[in-house]
Amino acid sequence: MHFLDQAKIYLRSGAGGPGAVSFRREKYIEYGGPDGGNGGKGGDVVFVAVPGLNTLIDFRYAQHFKAKRGGHGMGKDRTGAGADDLIIEVPVGTQILSEDREDVLVDLVEEGQRVTLLHGGIGGRGNASYKTSTNRAPRQHQPGEPGEEMWVWLRLKLLADVGLVGLPNAGKSTFINQVTNTRAKVGDYAFTTLVPKLGVVNHKGREFVLADIPGLIQGAAEGAGIGDRFLGHIERCRVLIHLIDISGEDPARAMEVVEGELEAYGAGLEDKPRLVALNKLDLADEELFEGFAEELKAVGAEKVFPISGATGAGVEALLDAILGYLPHKTMTEHPGNEIEDEAEEKPWSPL
Image (cartoon, rainbow, N blue to C red):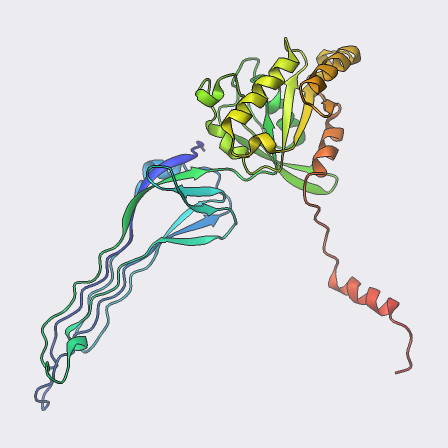
């Protein structure tokens, strides 16, 4: 499945149905009077966040969404049928922006979240509603209110607990393959990762979602390389892992470049907790690691983790550190066990 995280679509809610002009005509009933019913309400445009989706690719092939109009009123005071709402399913984490991308209209961050963006028009009045003591045979009616319409942008920001950042070839794809069941592409060249990847890490009885985004290079905030487009997918992360290639020319400079791009992007990324890891430890010795670790601490790293994404060395210590930034969820005890515990603690009584 192709990955798409931005799409522009056109939306229009349904117009209200027109009211009817009708008069009662029955045998033996003289001067039956008006009995035209009101029109039905037009359909709303509703967005729903559903699980199991992680791309907006469907909106590349379908860009116009129009709800149906309400049914017209009929004689015998029959109101027109209301149109069904137009339900648009999007991935969890989707934002709906105005056409100029300046305003966030809706942010769907919870599974099952449902938002009505455009309301359908109200049905028009039939001539029966105009009847008065002085106007006993009205022929006026309303056509029904028109629906609302607008162009919007959909922008997907993947929901993940932990984000991976680093220069191209820092070993991010190898790392996510090591700790999850993801099979990200690995190659001995830059930008093997072209779109964000998600994986679920299961460590010591706890699970969290790990996101890998394409590598950053100097000038990414101005559009160099793949640019900073995919940085939005780690805005919601609780902690970032900064992977640095220990076999690179200057690890300290590599750290400064990536940190500079995160600060230039903004959106709170520069304030998120960092875990700095020197990767590819299998290609260096401990003495080299100690020297580079001191250089990284000199440019802002609090602690440096030695790891090897290829062999798994040091990965467990890094995952242990990640758990400290995530909310702890305890398993719910079986109700039967709770009752037994309460019975044991309750003092004996003859009653």
